[in-house]
Image (cartoon, rainbow, N blue to C red; front, top):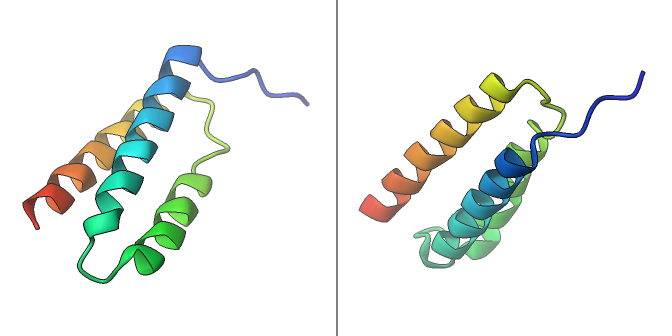
Length: 72
């Protein structure tokens, strides 16, 4: 069974928050080499999602993480 592609607007939001987090990771206390693989793994673990509500929840969680990293 082929899954429908995700909503293009949501996809852009996911990519944008990923790029923001990746950029913030450059100043992460434990280093970019520690941060990047974990960020990638977190996003890839949700790459299968197609339900827009679940994708929105993932974006909200990523926004929370962004705020936490900015507070460091």
